[in-house]
Image (cartoon, rainbow, N blue to C red; front, side, top):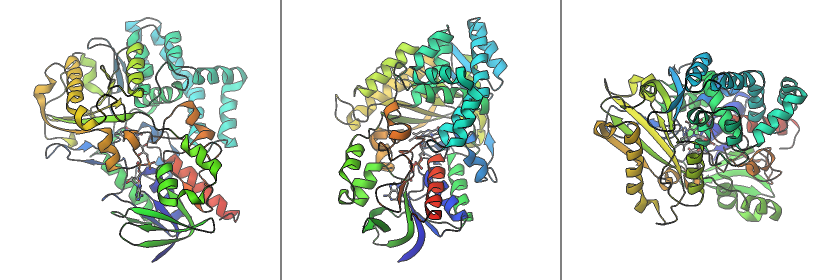
Length: 515
Ligand SMILES: Cc1cc2nc3c(=O)[nH]c(=O)nc-3n(C[C@H](O)[C@H](O)[C@H](O)COP(=O)(O)OP(=O)(O)OC[C@H]3O[C@@H](n4cnc5c(N)ncnc54)[C@H](O)[C@@H]3O)c2cc1C
């Protein structure tokens, strides 16, 4: 039996960041990962044909570039980042597109060419981001209620700014878009981030994530690691092992051992047992942890009631294409763009999101199309390109009851939508790979129903409510047991901050002799 200070269950970015910080503090740490490689939803491989490297799950790391984790863990040591001339774009039709360029003035000038007032509107929104929004993001990434970032945000926003900002962030995203922008494509550019989450643009709570994604893209771009997401996974794993942590892949934890309401270790499917002297940190889903690994006998009824209310969002349908040339977009501006959002206008965005939430396979899905090879040609043979496509769908289609029978028909819808915007694309496809929500969950049990956010990002599941009302500081009713996955604050995305905040909480609990 191994005997360590802390066990981390799962090696997603949050688990690896937590392991690195605990190991740096001198703790003996073992990470147990059920998959063959560490990294969780940060992974790449030749998914279609040899020579084409695709990002299996996450792909664009703007959030990581806004997170203190990047510098603190020294992830850039042996990673090279590639940048796009234009990080994001949104299309409401094949001809009507709005583009975010690296230079904010160029973005504003492009929007102004479509509608005179939209250029200054973008410039003003970006000014707000630089003056106030970035400190809002810092506050959002840190632990809930941390006084430092909260005060910094309040100081920057000042009294009136605080009211205006709070109203803007609490309102539905479409209100902001319609009030400030007149061109449908410019509105879609601001709203495009909503297509990455499960909250429709006409719902309160849709604004924060979309604004952060749109303006972070303007600030830091949409960086991709040269060679594929797997390079980032390797850098995260190296940060943990360089600090002294041990990572054991191919090891699925099947039980968290609790004795007299204290966690004492974990058992794995291979029969091995690791004793944890101080803590166990779970980079897992909350129900998988408490219902599956711990057992409800160890948990108070009130906690279990709160846990029963935890909801997952819509799922993701993922398509990877290998092309023998660039995507032949009708709008030439899209050729140099990292992430193209084929969203349609705000009405179309709301409709697609509502359908997905209601179990209906969207008739006109919002497609998020990544063109990694535009910035990183090393991922394909000379002249070749990859496309990474994801779109939000129901976890299970209501009509058919299973993605197995709906997959082919929906793939046709996705390919037709691409063809509408890039005529001739189909003829350039030399290989493809498709992942339904069911496939994603099979590969990684944290992606319940294919939800890439590991839990709905609606307002009632944020901050003090995530994952269980009142249990937002990573601790659990079991002494020494912590949850550090994206199902905790600050939620989905590769920023590592759930792991970061959790590790700091664990170290603080140890200093105060609570564990
Ligand atoms: C298709 C897709 C696209 C995405 N795109 C982006 C993007 O472009 N940019 C971005 O910032 N974010 C993106 N995300 C979201 C981001 O990848 C996740 O929010 C992030 O990876 C969450 O990290 P995590 O550490 O909480 O969990 P995960 O990365 O999900 O890792 C959890 C790990 O725990 C392991 N595990 C679970 N249970 C056990 C067990 N019992 N025993 C052992 N191991 C276990 C799993 O195998 C997995 O390796 C995307 C996600 C998906 C699925």
